[in-house]
Every structure is written in C-alpha cells, then in structure tokens.
Length: 333
Image 1 (cartoon, rainbow, N blue to C red):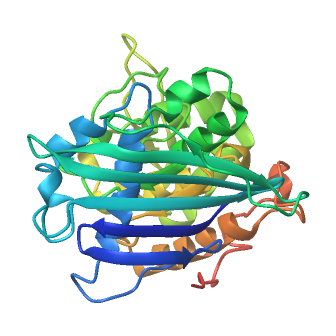
Image 2: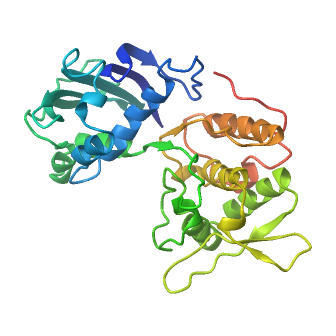
Image 3: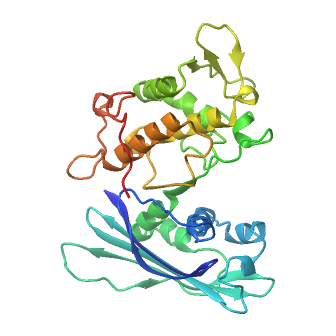
C-alpha cells in the first residue's frame, strides 16, 4: 500500500501557498483557466526530472526558461519554493521535503533537503534526516545508494509519481516514431514507447494485453489487433482493422485514436506495475463522449480495485472487463 496522503507547496508558479492538500485515491482538479491546475501538475514533472540519478533538475530548469519562470511572480517577489510530500504506506509515513533557492544564472539550488520515516506502530514522529544545502541536484539518490532503506523507499515512491500527458500527437511526436523494443518496463509520460510497452505485455503478461485490446475494440469497433514486431532493433506501433488486410501505422492514426491506445494501455496494465501516483493531464482531450465514459470508469476502477490491505489483485479474471464492470460508471472527486 502506497498512497500520497498530503502535499504542501509554496512559491511555485501561480501557487503562492498550498498547505497540506489532502489527497485521496481519485482527485479531480476543476477550475477556471489560469486557476493553477496545470501548474500543480507541472510540479510533479519537476519531481520526475529531479529524482533520476545523477539528477536532471538543472536541465529541466533550463528547458522551461529558467528559475524565474518557476518561482511565484518571479525571483524578485519569491526567491524560493518549498514542498513537502507525505506518503502513507503499510508500515507508517514517509516524508520528503525540499527548499529550493534562486541562485546566479537564473537557476535553483537546494537550501534544504530532508526526509524521515515514522513507524505507525511506535506512535511517534521520527526526527528529520538532513541532506545538507548548496547542491544543484538532489542527493537523495546518493543517500539511497549507500543502503539507507528509508532513502531508498522515498526515492522509489517519488519516482513512481508519474505525470502522463498524451497531448502531443503531431507528425513529429515520439509516439509516432520507431522505438527501442527493450525500453519497455514503464510507459513513458508522452506514450513514446507505447509499441515497446505493448510488445512486452503481449509476450509476458498476455491476459493484460488481451484486456487492453478488448477495451480498444469496445470503443473503436473497427480495431482488430496490434501488429508488433521489432525490426533492426526498432519497433513501430502498427495494427490491423477488422475485415481488412491492410497494416496501419501511427502516421495513419487520428490524434484521438493514439491517445485512446495510450490511455487504455496505461490504465489496464498489470496492477502490480502501476505507478504509485498516476497524474493525468486533460485525459479526455480529443476523445469521443463514449470513450470518456469508459475512461471515467477505468479511473475509478484503477483507484479502488484492491483488496482490503490495499494490495493489487493479480488475477486477471477479477479485473475490470470491457463492457461489463466499467460501462456507465463515472469517477468521483
């Protein structure tokens, strides 16, 4: 059982202060344009860049236009941003906190980085473990590499807070290109390795692959099956349609079809492979109303289809099935 219980965030983009936001299995952000929904999601993107070893925080900062664009109303108004994430697990609470300060060359450095684990059976809060200050990249991964179990657990939890945004389906989008078939363990945030991901499921987790195909057929009755075969150590997303011998490729797919393929692959993958936290940015974009209805039911099912201990149910016969369990259901906030 891993659950992001609360998030505190201040000084980040349009978010001046967000104090201990309580999170549940499903959380839906609703608000006017400019209310800060996308900015909250973009904080998790920052975490996605920050946590891999040896760290890519500085690269991400340069990509988004410098630290000034990340700080609330700019560095002159807000010279630092702070965040704390509290994860509830079966044995207690894992907490991770950072404070990033504006520095020369319009970048951010760590003014504070710390973590702790409080075991629920003890009923007390553990002291913080400090990771120092002045570093440009997170040192949590280096601490985890020393064998520190709490650091390893928190790093694993942070890495599994994944943002998925399947908006880019342009002609040059990565999802439309050939990919390395061995890069297949976790679906990338933009769906770039969808063909590789599906190819692995087809070979290693066949019942799960088949339920993805069945779900696609329910929303798109013309769909028959994927045709996934590596060539020269590259693989391309290809499929067949019913009553046709023509092989279709990603450049012949509509934007909505590609997004549908990626969303269903994400939500219907084996439960034991799902990220701890799945963040979807405007998943309904470009989808048919019926597909949105199916998507809503799947979101609810992914969030709630666990046993009483919160552990994934691994029998595919017990999992959501197209047209049976999720038809007509809707997600709740």
